[in-house]
Image (cartoon, rainbow, N blue to C red; front, side, top):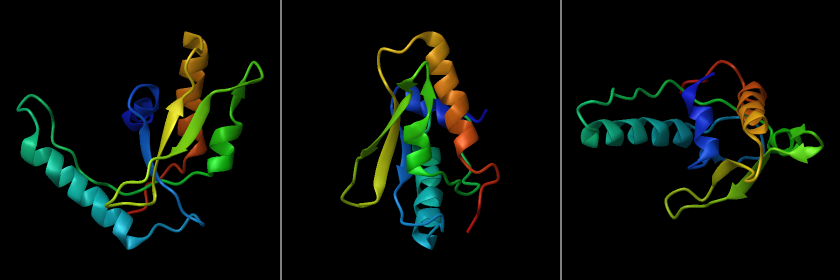
Length: 118
């Protein structure tokens, strides 16, 4: 499972809202700039990041993921001045370790498998 989905457990999995699964060119540009910015300031012991593309998922599907009849994930509007479409996916607090592990597997399964580059 790609490491990016583990961001949902502690810092939020950064996403962008949209009315369709189409990925806008600005999304790819933000991804490339984010990787470049990280690489310019990263500690020497960390590997460089490379933007490979974007994956998509349905917000409704993410919000519908359940285990033991309890929601596992929440999606929040976390708009930024530079990106009003920004949102974050978080694991819901107070879940057991097995529920948290299941949430990370389910969220990875919910997203498209092959990144679209642009």
